[in-house]
Image (cartoon, rainbow, N blue to C red; front, side, top):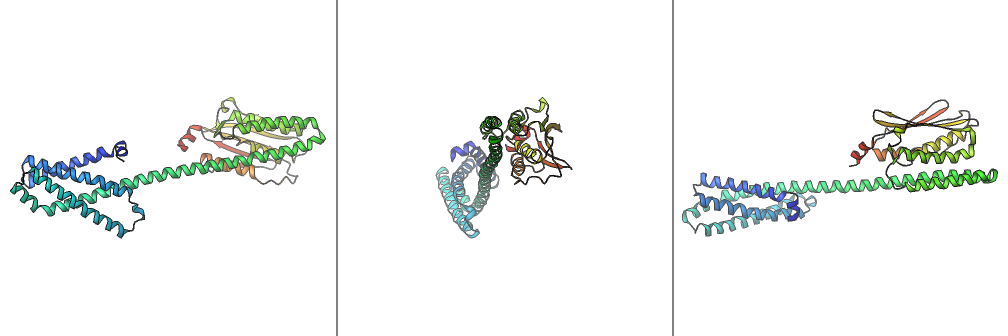
Length: 356
């Protein structure tokens, strides 16, 4: 505890405060009681030093007493007892020490006896102030520790939820791909083999980033192209992919696998259900220092469309909220025959400041 006091610079402050009290004590004794300089200095040092040492004991009393669980009566009784014991030890030991130091000078001892009541009342006032300050310090320290624990628990919960959402994304895509491969093994075994190879590379990539907090847009595009190549094996020339992304956007850091569910939904609800030519457009642009990434697909409004669980898009929105702490980073726009999802990504520096 003493090491912690030194570390937090509380002990030097505590000593400085008692030095000020000793100076005030000296001035009062010399000016109001007419004592000599030497005896006044001795008295100030003795009374202040004894009280300061007792104050260290009071610090431990406050520090290790769970005052939050004590009711008002218990707290009052505890400090009434503590103050009485403190006053007795403080004034009694100081009185005896000053008797020895003054050589039991009759005039000085008489003055000491005459001012006993005032001195004890002053000691009680010091006791109240000191204990109040100790409670404030302990309460402040407890609040900091509680905040640290809450932040740690929040981070653990955040990581757990994030990992859970990531775990949902991978099987969602894997099941769809395996269904496609299953159908191709009958109609076109060569294409099925090609899909298996690309799927293997895709899963290897996604697993390698499963524990990363952020990845670059360049890495995510590589990930998306693997997925789109898998789908192109099935749909052939009628599936068109367009990219409008500048080289300056590629280093931007975004959550890993955040775009893949959007592109998967675009293929699932666009290409799967559109008999003719279908497209998926992926574009990026800077807007007021933020990166905006858009995924657009066309669809045939005359087709009933596939009913999905909505897991992919919901997971993306949840992840965006958990990573950036904002709810307005995803925008969905639907026209007569197009569907667009636009995500906004802040600069990575602002993300670091949010989490630290």
